[in-house]
Image (tube, rainbow, N blue to C red; front, side, top):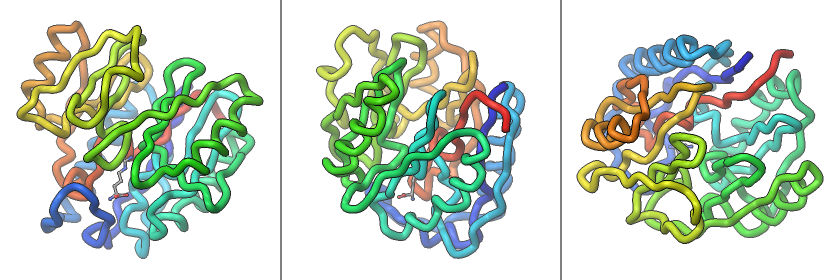
Length: 256
Ligand code: CIR
């Protein structure tokens, strides 16, 4: 059975970290309703959803993806590049430790979950402002024992690797070509986002389904033409915090 760890929206989300999007007012009540709909979509796609309580003093804590990488054999607690986000890991680690042995990235390494995309036994890792060489080297060492290869990827002008590319079918990627190149992904079928929807590359695969923001109709049409069906959710308020659909959950096989 799939488990999804999520966390409620913080009342302080308006003070979130922002890198590439301008700060605008966030309607926290609406953000909470949208987050609930997102959790409902996870349930409908077969997840047992765990909801951690909001962290009132940690504006970005709803974005649980960034503090861990969960694999079948083990989980790695990251060390976020944004110092304000480092305290978010403790409560997620407490829950995750019921499911997996935990490894961790140590200073001076930084690594965020949004920068890691797993495809089979390969972990693609974005060299972003949040993930540094030491973080990537440590991840490579930790995961080589488990038979995973780590493949660093150059990227630009966006927060995380998965802002620019996500897996939409076993061998198909959805890509924002202005933020990441194709060279690292030889052998994949590539779908490009619609150029008028720059933030449209972040999709969340859940079992045989997929969760996708409702605000990218033209890219959605490209996915549909490729035979990919999605459950759409309105995540406008989470997007104002530079979040998207992958970042609000940690999804993995397993029961405690
Ligand atoms: C941050 O800048 O860290 C948050 N405001 C947004 C994090 C989004 N995380 C993700 O896409 N994995």
